[in-house]
Image (cartoon, rainbow, N blue to C red; front, side, top):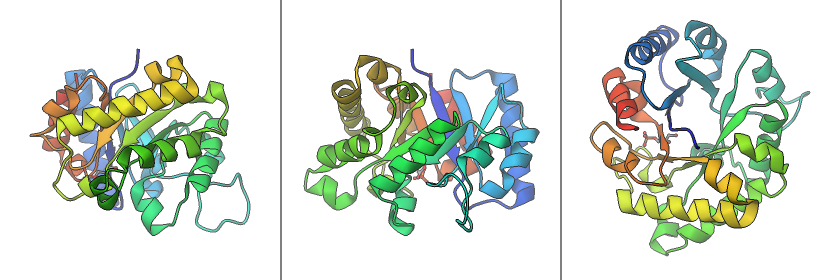
Length: 252
Ligand SMILES: O=C(CO)COP(=O)(O)O
């Protein structure tokens, strides 16, 4: 059985006070409403420890937005998997398209980051997704397959039990343009087939595959109703308490 998950990627938003307030409110809402979905929030790294201590982990899990590709040493500005593990962190977003684009992360770098996460028992929310021109030239299946195979082929088979995938078409991120539920289902089913063909039935059946890209309180129901969509990775709408809690409720 795979977990239903709704994760909020706060990206580089919210000051300290607002971050604590929002996390506290979400924690209280989950405690009162007992949603089916596991709720995860990913704040900027400077808030991770405070939020880990400020929420109850039975209700809300905390994720980092990235992880270093190296184990330790002279990598100014990076935060390692070992350091994140040492403060009690269990989840990390890895390979987000904004990092692929602005920080020039390649599949090779992402594979190294996944390896670090697995080494320290951190579950990666591993992001894949095609750009607009790749979708328009119908290369999206090929692109997503190569992102998955390149990043996962060198991982240990037993580590893949921790894997969470987020399919986020780049053209749908922050644009207000979502993939239709049918488009999203089609590629989620394809991702599950790739997992099955390359890594076996257990990985295919047990990996939660989240959809991300302009998920909001209006479209979440239809997206989450698709059989191969196990929840969402939400950006903008996760910064608003009302919207985010409605999105969590939509994940059944
Ligand atoms: O990038 C995303 C989540 O990681 C999606 O962002 P939006 O929900 O703002 O489109």
